[in-house]
Length: 136
Image 1 (cartoon, helix red, strand yellow):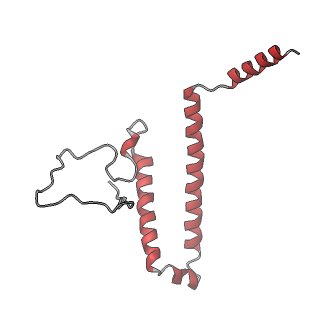
Image 2 (cartoon, rainbow, N blue to C red):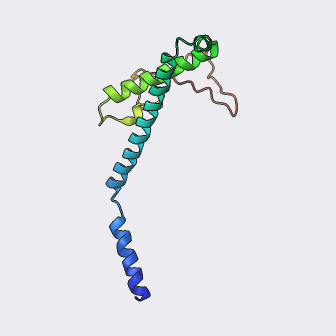
Image 3 (spheres, helix red, strand yellow):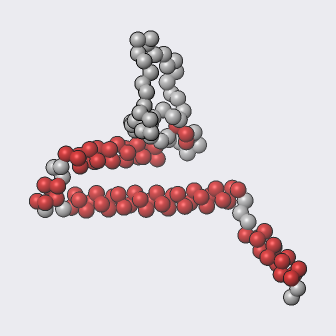
């Protein structure tokens, strides 16, 4: 077999394996779907394991830690945001409006952002972000 023929065969195989942009997008979405389902199952499994262990006094004692309540509250808020988005946002809606709720996406507020003259703009420390995630 000549090199020219080998090269032509390789080029034909590459062309046959090329995906259209739409096929690539579908594959990309499929990968995210599988990862997200796996993560949700892991979250459910861990939560169920804790709840099933409530008879254990050390588990109950560990659940009284104040720092843990903060983590659980944040997790509950994130899960509620995820739940509400997945269940109630139409699939053709602008996905930019979802996310952390910081307002960086679609603006629902029609009032102009007017600041009182007596209030100086808040300055963030250099190198640090005070970005706080809040549900919309």
